[in-house]
Length: 380
Image (cartoon, rainbow, N blue to C red; front, side, top):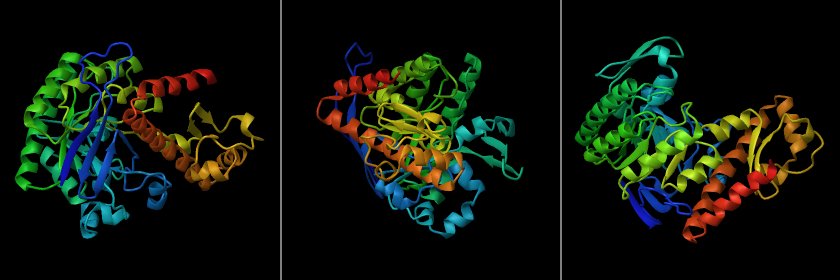
């Protein structure tokens, strides 16, 4: 069961002019509930958003979380998850879930991975054992996981990459997408499968990749291979070029991005879905996101600070704890630090997306965006 409805679309201009935005509101319907878009998906790589319980995620208003096929396949393994009737029941999450195919992990663990036309052979980063993912197997594993939205196997290319390297990755990604799509259709399942646009930092290759995938008519589309070391302005350029190439009646997902500033900017270009480890990972490293920018807890100026992380935030952490105490926990390496910091950062991201949706709904996104960035400028 999968459907996407565009509730409000503020323009599909291929090129944005000053003061224009391509914002849109949508609703994704899945067997585990609806998702209001634009949306950010907290990353629960191995079936857990690190340090948070399901109840805490729900309190933060999480609509959907992300799991990773590569990691879950290696540990705990398909046998365990299949025995538990799927990932939802295994982790006690009854809302929508998306699973990544593992393409980014093959990129980040490139020394252990070998790409061929047939798929990817790789060595486990856990125990060194050898494994192989074909595009069909990537879909098959995700069917066992039972995610509502599955991703096609792709070849994620880092930055910089030559045109020849980007073209090779694009051609394999298209080939694998077609094989995975055909396998998914043969299975006749209700889980949705998204295609992933590649092409490196070359606009003509991004165009080709998008066109080839759109011809297959996936239920949704993702833009991969961004935020892989390229300059920020180049990342925005590629996103702004690619998003209008994707069908307006399908969800558009930008993978692995990003900062709060990225989310606001890319929503303005017409993106619907995001994921990134940043809010949870940075929380564990003592960096907190606020309406005025980031706070670094190790900074000595917070040692005697009685105020919360953000006066305007109503998360559990801000309502109950001071920066002084949070700094103490972090400096003492107390486990509670991970939990309280992550609650705040996840809440901040999801609350930001809720405010973005409200601004689109009330036709105030441009002023919202100006206010968002002006607060960050005033902190500098």
